[in-house]
Structure formats: structure tokens, C-alpha cells
Figure 1: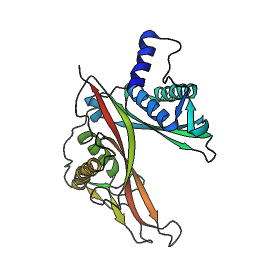
Figure 2 (figure 1 turned 60 degrees about the horizontal axis):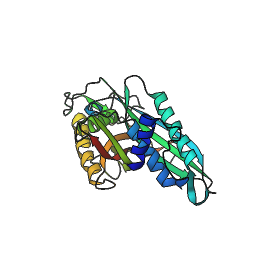
Figure 3 (figure 1 turned 120 degrees about the vertical axis):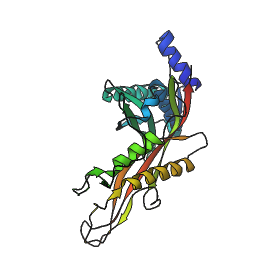
Figure 4 (figure 1 turned 45 degrees about the horizontal axis):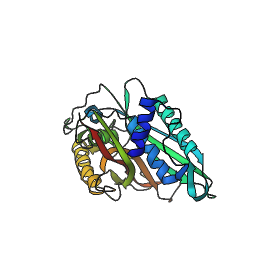
Length: 278
């Protein structure tokens, strides 16, 4: 927090030409990722209660940075990285878009001379209304994903995302300014948690992922996933902030293109919340 407050104060108030994100000449890679991620989440601190009732957009991109010995990054490189990521995020935000959370991770090449910095940003759309209540449109059924032509035409994974993100993963307080630090992501697989996520098996020659999901099934998935994600938090201070679902096939290898099971993969993003209630 000290580095963030210092940098924001220098940049916004004194506008000193020599303001720095860090005071040292270089810091370790993991510390660099934390500082840049936390500062960007602070810079884009537009989260409001409205973020829990919205349409979401995702942006993923990668940048490469040079490393010094012992996997350190120069302070000037950190400054450039911060600017590039911030500019890229600003570039994809529309007039009514606001950032919910930014997750940054790093991987190092085999020689230890370069790091790939991956940014995963989630934004939400203002002025969107979503009624957070159990889904109950009669006997209408959904499909597990939007890749297939089925009698059921509604994408069940999209309904599930809406239910989880709007009805369960929300900010505890509605303050003037909110942001997250120590952002982390965990992956959950449908075959491990079939009561929480879609999972279905098929005969290799009869594969068809049009197996319907009832709306009550979506409600149960969402409720059980809320328990799953809160039970498996990275640390005590974390809260789940967003759920993103991908449909995932498993190829049996019995014949070309044969699939013997399909399931949802859930990526849950966590953060430690900070609030300015004034």
C-alpha cells in the first residue's frame, strides 16, 4: 500500500517528473507483479454496487520484459510495464465500461533472461439491469454451451455465469471507491465437482452435447459453486470476485474426433478487497 499511495500522490498531486512506482533500482519479479497489479487495480478503482448487475467483458494480453540476475526487474522497466498495461486497458474500455478487477501473472523463459507478463482484465458495463432471483421460466431448457445446434437454444454456461457473478460474487460494502490487491485465480473442473458444474459422459460414436440442463439445475450449480469457491479461497482475506466458464471436451481416442465426456471448466478470480467509505 505504501508504494501505491506514494506513486498516486506524486503523480496526481505534485506531478513530479521523477516520481517512481518503486524507490529501489530493481526488485524481484514476483514483487514487481504485485506492485504493478495492485497499482493498476487502484488506478481503475471504479467498482460500484452496479458491478454486480452487469454484462462482463474479458481482455487478455501478454508483454515481454527483460530480467536481470536473480530474476529482478529494473525500476524503469517496471514503469514502462505499468504504462503499457494501463494504456492497453484504457484502449479497450468503452465510454460506459468500468474495470472490475485486473489479474497479472508472470512466467520466465528457460534462460531466466526474460519474463512474459500476462494480464487478465475484467470490465463491466454501466446502466445494465439484472434481476437477481432464481431462474424459473417454466419448462424451458438450456444447452451446456453455445457451440452446438440443439433444440435448446439458450447457452446454459452464460446463464450460470450471470447467476454466480450477479447473485453471489459481490462486494460486501457499497463504498465510494473499491479495489482489490493480491489477485489470484483458481481452476475447478466439472468432473471433480459435478454438483457444482456441468458434467456429462457419452458413447464415442453417439456424442451430442445437446443434453439439456433445467433452469433449476442452473440455480443449483450456481448455489453450490458459491459454496465451493468460498470454501477454497487462496487465503482468509480473499473473496471470490468473478467466475468465467469454458466448455471442455475430453477426447477418448477410440476414433478420430471421438469425445467421451464434456464438462465446464470454472476459472474463479479472487482478490483482497479494500474500501474507501466516505
